[in-house]
Amino acid sequence: MINIAPSILSADFSKLGEEIAEVERGGADWIHVDVMDGHFVPNITLGPVVMQAVAPHTNLPLDVHLMIENPEQYIAAFAAAGAHVITVHQEACVHLHRVIHLIKEHGVKAGVALNPATPVSTLSEVIDDLDMVLIMTVNPGFGGQSFIPGTVRKIRELQTMKEERGLNHLLIEVDGGITAATAPMVVEAGAQVLVAGSAVYSKADRSAAIAEIRGSVQA
Ligand code: DX5
Ligand code: ZN
Image (cartoon, rainbow, N blue to C red):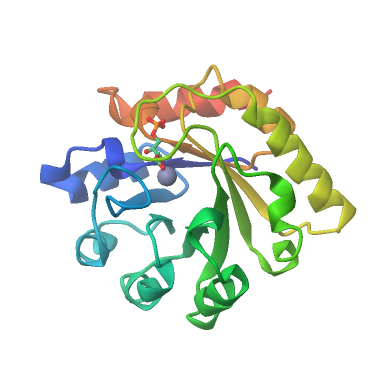
């Protein structure tokens, strides 16, 4: 089962509620919310106030990707705003174990993201506690960037670690440059949640865009 999570980063922010409702009608499985602080990444997007405003516009799980420093300061706010899963960056957390458990204490599923330069082995000591690992397939900060092919090897390595430890529940998510052309190779490597920003929102027909990605990974 492959979940497709359109990223609202590429949506029209002047009508976010409508943009989210449209991809839900179009067959999306999750809604991916990119939070950027202008420090951890060079871009600034939205915070819990905006997320809380859009949450009532969908029944789909809200997949919150925190590309921010000191994410522990904002877990409570994003949990209250309706997050289903909160993903923090390994590179942004000195006390990663503590942050993962803080997320879980709020009744939210916990994910950790790895930048392209960060090895899978850095999760060795915490992976048993995780609900999801996000392998970044671009350097975070912007939508519409090109997929980095070398990240496929990391997805495979994570899939192997998952199998070796019997972590059947652990979801593998990928984010960045995912299209109908790149989706087959990440799914073959083990990805189960596909984030797609520009591949969905840059198209006039969002339903067709989602169907095209799904069709590329289903026999
Ligand atoms: C990148 C964000 C992504 C972004 C993906 O920093 O984390 O979620 O929206 O956009 P595309 O699919 O256009 O690469
Ligand atoms: Zn993202």
